[in-house]
Amino acid sequence: MGSDKRELDLGDAPKGRAPKTVSGWDYLSHGGLIRCVFSTIRKTKMGMGASARTRTTRVLWFVEQTGDEQFEVRKINDRNVPSGNAEVVPMHRLLNDFTPELAHYEDVVLPAMRELEEILDQGDEHREEGRLYSAEMEYGKALGIEERNVRALFGLGLIFLSRKEIQRTRELLNELVQVKAAFDGKNQHLFNEFGIALRKSVLFNEAVVYYRRALDFVKDDENLYYNLARAHYENGEWTSCLDALILSHRLNPGLEQVRDLFEVIVGLSEDERRLRQYDKPPVPRAVAARARQILRAERDVLPLDEGPVVFGAPRGRARSGSPRQDQAGPGAGTPDENGGD
Image 1 (cartoon, rainbow, N blue to C red):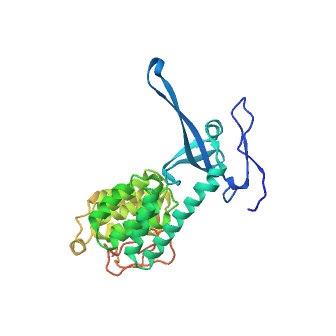
Image 2: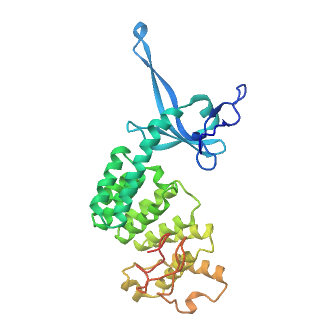
Image 3: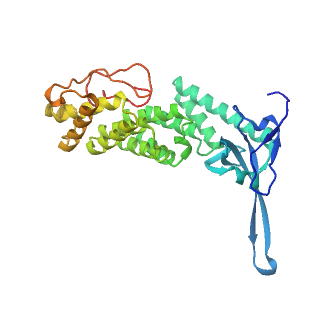
């Protein structure tokens, strides 16, 4: 942005206070949103009576503006990068309690963040090119800088799954689901890839935990509900599968993958041979009836039990391009998560 300077108005101050402004293009990210280091002062009383004294500590925060009057703050760790889950701070609190630290951002934090990004890029490149040991080393470096770095955790998870290291995957998943930032949409590609990899590794229970954790933060994503339904389907948990499928359908009645899975449920309820072939438990009568009812209402055609259900027909992908379906039928061949197989 060059050397140009301007006054950035941080918005309306609380009543009785003048608006506070900070100078410098470096506070701005793309789109004009604040992205900088700020500090707060924490006072701790130590001792009792005449020997009591107050200890003052400066705490550094990485602040990113996420809305007109809303900001996310993360503590700066001893390696000079943002770390931990973000806390949401309204504008009036930023104005009252936080002090800009532009020099520290430019001279210390920004270079450390760039170094971390380069390490992660190198790890991703190694992983995508099949150099898994080298990738694991880079992700380990990243975690030494930021203990719960989301990209590094996802990258390691994908490596462990590719090597069939199930116990290490489970341990990493237990850690990953505690990190809110893993599910905030900023790492969507890795998020989807990891979910698919869990299912392909037959870790259906883990996939259920993974998608349920994501839904703690995102309540209106039809694809997440579909992915959860798919994990329940693989586990033969018909009622839970239907519940998640209905929620996805309510959010987006036009999602082709959801309709396909309704059809699979109905078809399997009518064909014991295919249930045995794909190692699925019987479909409860109420589940099949509800799935059939939804399909009837949507399509306004003859009831599905009056005609055959064709397995292995082309299926679609959530949030992706051309549809595709494996010819094996239900099981490995049901529609895939966002991004496809």
